[in-house]
Image (cartoon, rainbow, N blue to C red; front, side):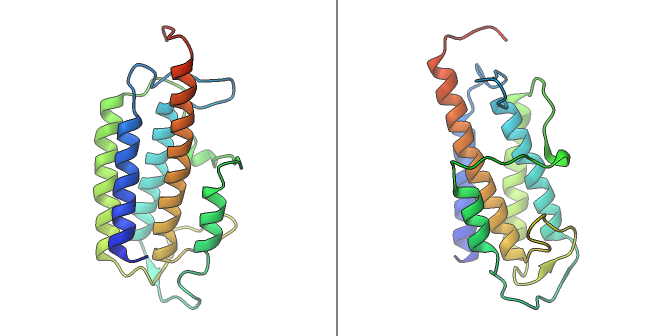
Length: 172
């Protein structure tokens, strides 16, 4: 996938999140053990900001195929039947999240990450931090990681919205 295709896919994915946001159910727990839609969006923002920093951070020449981990990353995140636990540093706190704040931050994230992808050499290895089970990612892999991770959570958001829309609306 070319940079322009990745950017278009990220923009479409983030735009889909904004379409799924329903302020009337944003902070409701759909079922025991689930995050709220607000927590899911907060998690996306936390991860996205980290990946924007990773892409813009220190890097070095890559000594392996630049797309070596893309297939594994895609399989990991686009298997919607598998569940995983977020790292503590990107686990959102329970609470009430402000829809407008999240919409503003999503737009800022979309602008920041797409600008990084568009302007940087994605063939270089990002050295800011490593990802468990993958190590240091190339810029290309980092872009795909963010994209596929976000798509997984869009699917989660759809499930939350569908679940809550089937239940009678209760006051939070």
